[in-house]
Length: 397
Image (cartoon, one colour):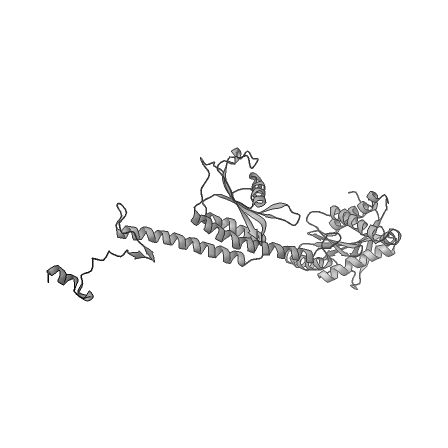
């Protein structure tokens, strides 16, 4: 038998196998290239790879921090502030804004970083991406036909979508135009989606809760605060006034002759008259005053940092405006009403929120029982029973 024949007849366990190819080196579960990159040895490649791993880990940690932070609060403004503060960790833009839609359907800026809300058309940009449900990336806003603006800036905007509804937008802006639009790679796009989805859910939940809370303290008819909110505010403001050594006044207002409107023209017109009265009373106060419908045709105004004289001035102005207003003029009824106003001041005549309500209410009924269409301040004599000091004459506005 020839040597070659003997070689082929050897058992398998004695047969020579071809030399095995070297297995690729695996680093963190990924095969490393067999041929080293030009100028880089294995140690250098490992360092570069680990830098990439650290960057991904830092991005993941930032995402977790944002998700935990927005999940720890139910305040929409705080959520928006967290997002715009942390967003620069993902995209190196100096200016950020988060925009959302309010109950009236209008867009409002919840939070900004590095820019004033009116300094850029952030709501117009947000409107564009929310209508189309797609991102907007522009190299120079002043030259882009999609947004009418003279601002030379690079922008990136992303819609916020929750439960199939586009409820906001995150806008990034650099007030230096770029030579060409920025490009987002697939990894960064995935990272942004991972960020925006939980943000949208948290923001939507917070906004829904805020609306529910607002409805629970809002009068359905007049859209003023209701008596529940009034009691809450008075407890809060009396504590603050006591702590700061400042006065606090309360006005109780009752519409004279309102029952006749219901009896003569029906409850529909009566409700319309109440809405008009609420607006007259609201405009008679100041921006810092809190106006509420106490019940029926009774209203209340909380006047922080206001003593008796200042409260009387507000009450007289309110009474005069109610008396001069032509109610239901749009319905060609031209009804005239007047107001009886009671005034009480903390701590002059009351030591608590409950006593303040009692004093203002008693002063108001004193006016009702003595001719109506007037204003009266409560005083407390030595026997602690409420005595009313009448003031029927009108004061200059």
